[in-house]
Image (cartoon, rainbow, N blue to C red; front, top):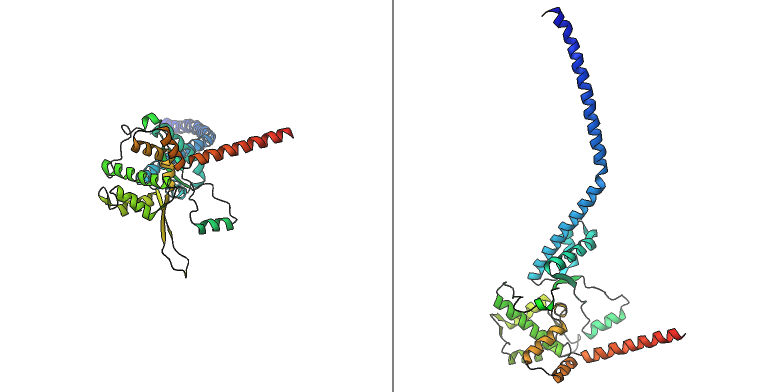
Length: 309
């Protein structure tokens, strides 16, 4: 190779090194800029990630609630934390509120908390009076209830569930509504003998559709429509145990007094003011209304007395 070319080559190498160094510096400058941009993003990214996580958990909660409602299983707070939230238990209030919003605006439903189970026996009432513990304000169990207007709750629109079949579902709903109504019309407590007499008159003492009546009543207990109370005599005393039936927490929320009154009116067909008066009296609504008016009068009088002072 000629000497001139040999002398020229180092110059080319130097030029190539000079060209490469600025390029490396430019790349480093760009990468530094990217790092600075990334450092500005984490707060927004974390906020978006948190919102997206809450939305996903809310959808998961809705799916869990609907699956529980199909089997008429109470949606318990502990179950939500275990099967929906996992290690995000502290996000319960946020996720629950978001799920409620989606249920109301999209599904026409909402989660309603079941009432606390009442003390029924004398022993339970005495224990509650002796204990100094504060009464529970909530049961921690929920069911799905419709928020649709009354115009959209007719039988022509709301068809019975296809599980197990429309006929079986309609029969079951009619039977538990009937039993709940009988209990409520008997001051909220119905003896086993009286229930059997009612079912015998209705020809439902043996079977309800394709199921034994005893199995249907057990299913109603399991679903929370009724509560079966067995009272046994104290130890050392002779006597037979007594069985009474009471209105369950799901029945109070799902059927309620309005459902009982609606069923009675439907059964009688023709309805007059005297029958309405007797119905309200049987359900204790007249006494409750008088008590509420009396309480309001006392509050008003107390307010006036305080104003005079």
